Image 1 (tube, one colour):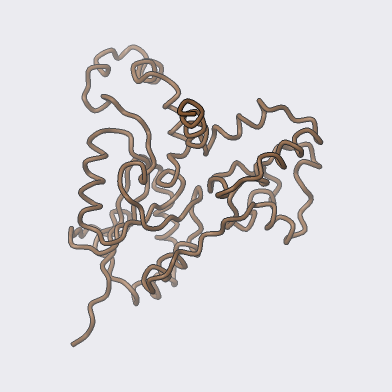
Image 2: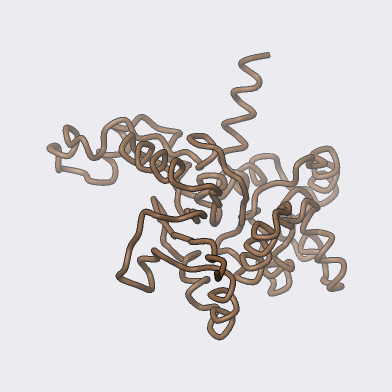
Length: 260
C-alpha cells in the first residue's frame, strides 16, 4: 500500500500575502515540493480547500478576537504549524499600531466615518505574532521570506528535524560578501543585531538592513552601541529602525522592565 504524503494547507491573516506569493513563484521547484507533500488548501493558487491537513503554514499577524479563534481552530487541526514571514513571526509593521488606543487609530485612518467606531470588526484589536496565541513548531522569517529557505524548513520538518534558521547577525553574511559596511557610507544598519539568512540582500544592494527577520537570540547590544558611538548615530535614529519590523522587541523589553 502506497504511503500517503503529508497534507499541507496555507492560511493568511493580516498581511500583504507576499510570502505566499514567494512560494507560488517557486516555479519548477514546485514539482519537487509536490513530490513530498499534497497541498490541499492554498487560496493564492488553487480553489480547492480541505480542513484535513497535517501541516498548517500560516502567514500574517493576528489583530482581532475572531482571528485568534480562527487560528486556534487551525492549530487544533494541524500536527505542525509553521509561521510564515515577519507578520506571523513578530507582528511586523502593522504591530506599530499597538502604540495607540484603538479608537484613536480608527479615527485617524477613517477620519469622518464615526460609524466605524462601533463596528465589531474593529473592536479590541491588538496585533500579535502567531506564537502569542498558539504554539508554533517552525519559523520562516523575513519580509518577504526566502523561498529556498522555506523549502529547507519544510524538508527538515518532514524528516523530523529542527528547521535550519540561522541565529547569527547579518554582519556575518556581509563580511562573507566583502561588502563595504553601510556605516562607512553614512547609513544606519541593523546588521549587528539582525538575524541573518537573507544573504545580506539589502546591504549588498546598498539598502539599510531593517531587521525584517527579527533579532538574533542573544544580540550584542553593547557592540551595537559601540558602533553607533563610533559613527555618531543617535539612539533615536536607531530606535526608528527598531520600530519598523521589530516593534515586538520594544513591547517585550518594556514589559520586562515593568515586571522587574
